[in-house]
Length: 201
Image 1 (tube, one colour):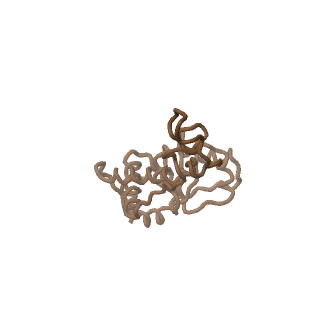
Image 2 (tube, helix red, strand yellow):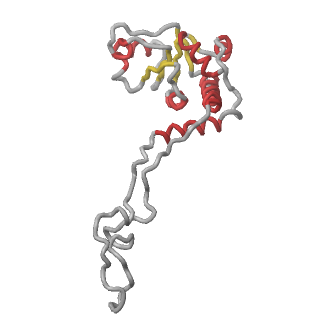
Image 3 (cartoon, helix red, strand yellow):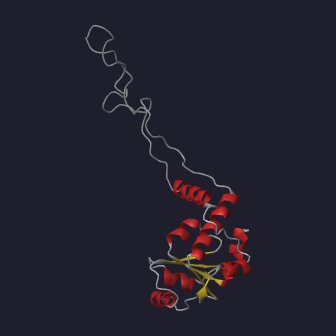
């Protein structure tokens, strides 16, 4: 196990942005898109045309001394329709591949500069036991939140990790910047370097 440096990233052809003045907007846009895409957008109220009930006029137009009204489904009345209420919609946002790449370069660069990225030749827990997984990670770092990025992991390794809330296994192809920002320490397995290099190029 060793610290993963800018020089190591260059050797692996992983392109990074170490300049703090670049890429921050891309990171913001991508995180906002992730959060927006998780919204269900199912909040919906009924208009006066959708409320169940009769369309009969409440009372005659003139002579009652009251205001003129049509039916009781008007938004003015309790049980009536809602004016300008929420409607079923999609909050999904699209982000270009260029922005995604820029954001990944920026976040990885920040993590490496902060010395929060470690490198290991391999990571596997053949026993499939949570205790063994915890020991394997604690031998590398004592951080409270750890993400381990590899090209792939065995079924036993996934089984050993699944009961832990302070650790996450993620493939290099699927890891996103929201995960990189959330977890304190990033452990990169050597076989993940090539996929990461493709994603940052």
